[in-house]
Amino acid sequence: MQGSARSENLEEIAKEVRKSIVKMTFEAKSGHPGGSLSATEILTYLYFRELNIDPANPNWPDRDRFVLSKGHSTPVLYSILAMRGFFDPNLLHGFRKINSLLQGHVVNHIPGVDITAGSLGQGLSNAVGLALAAKIDKKSYRVFTLIGDGESDEGSIWEAALSAAHLKLSNLIVFLDRNMIQLDGFTEEILTLGDLEGKFRSFGWAAITIDGHSFAEIRRAIEWAKNEEGPKMIIARTIKGKGVKFMENNPEYHGKPVPNEEKLNEALKDIEGM
Amino acid sequence: MMMSNELNWLPDLINKLDKKSVREAYGNTLVSVGADKSVVVLDADLSTSTHTSMFQKKYPERFFNVGISENNMMGVASGLSWTGKKVFVSSFAIFATGRAYDFVRQSVCYADSDVRIVATHAGLTVGEDGATHQMLEDIGLMTGLPRMRVFVPADALETEEIVRYVYENRGPFYVRLSREKVPVVHDSESFRFGRAETITDGDDLTIIATGILVSAAKIATSYLKQKGISARVLNMATIKPIDSDSILKAARETGRILTAEEHSIYNGLGSRVSEVVTESYPVLVRRLGVNDTFGESGKSWELMDKYGLNPMGIVNKVEEMMKVTV
Ligand SMILES: Cc1ncc(C[n+]2csc(CCOP(=O)(O)OP(=O)(O)O)c2C)c(N)n1
Ligand SMILES: [Mg+2]
Image (cartoon, rainbow over all chains, first blue to last red):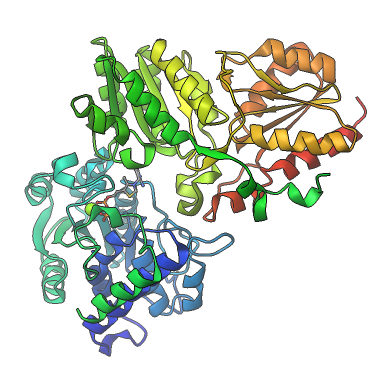
């Protein structure tokens, strides 16, 4: 890990990230807060504790990679990249606006972004490619990926899962944001995913389930992953909208920001009180 | 007197126009044709956006949300259709035609299945979601498929008529709709399958437009008239089969054709019109569309202005074309 992030308190950082998510989507009057708030601890931990990256040299060839396969969750990623110094935090004000760097869905011309995504179910295949290249080149970098539970409806996720196991990609570590909600509603009402851990295991992956809002469990899961063979699936049980009471577990806030100043202040207060 | 600075959608032209949601028009029409028990509707986790949720509310037993699995959805639609169901399938244009292209080609078109794909969120007017969601190649993909018939309604009323048409007839069909509310062009029913509609007559040049660009062409024409240019406007709501007779008549009578669409200049309305003209009566044809680039995040009408898909873009092209001696 390069840079100065190590000493700060993760809980405090996560609060700042959450506030930024709520504010930037409010300012843009558009965007996806729900699945950003559910993934906040996962990305905070990766970017402030785990990833071997260098904000001053974002294209360093030996860096660890991160793939935001659920490419709509840009508010959490952009907020963290700005906090880690990949680009000027003022650019967050341009989020989703015309002629701006920070596109609605994640795109690889942004410093710190490795893979373009937004059409669900494609990022994981890209991650397989990145991990495979490390094997070919005998490099030690790792590929971390975040996929959604709704995203796991896509057949291509399971094609990539077969590939990763077949290719024995031990350097591939995937988090699945198990927030139980997709765009139209609750995952188990729309398309039953059932026992995801068992499914991935039967596909040849090492798999565990953790509390995706616990830094301690995220840390233990990553340590576990370091000692397992083959691709690793960490199913992170999370709450969509986590930290903002009226957004929590509420499918309405998949792709909708807080509607007004009053709700914004309520949301910021909720986050502060976490 | 109309001024040239009133030819961009923003700051206020678009707000002055009467606009209606084509997605709501789709939802309403689905509910009304849904009285027929053979109608089955599928969606892939976008029902609240495509408005198939309106059908779901009324006929939950004949609505199926397959989750985020567009390929699967097209295959299921084909299977259902071979038992006599009249199947409607919806998603965003990018996923219905892009992600699921091979399923549409093999399971729907080659298999000759009675399936109607009604896709929303086509083109730049997706807005803030940006390039990954802004489908600018679907007219090309869908018109390239044997058996597929392709429609782009100009407004909400025409959407109702086309959805009813595809319900009453046997598929495969592709209907392309926008996310944004679009300016009202029609005050009465006018849709005829495979027929261009004359919005205004004129003899210096013909503007053949589709979708949102029909209203842009209408506005551009009143401005051009002040400048002494008489433009004919054709609404090409059926892109395939295309109305070759009206195109060739325009070629013969006006000598110049401008096409306008919220789509790539490649393989869309402009290409289809050029093919007809080149084969039988070559005249000057120019295309207004997106110039071989992806879109980006921004507000819908801001993007339409930036990419020149507005009355101003049409006026500029027309003025250039009138300078060419033909
Ligand atoms: C291929 C594809 N189909 C549909 C969409 C539209 N879409 C964007 S987000 C989303 C729901 C995603 O749910 P999930 O993966 O659970 O994300 P999260 O809950 O973490 O936000 C959908 C259907 C898309 N982006 N890509
Ligand atoms: Mg989810």
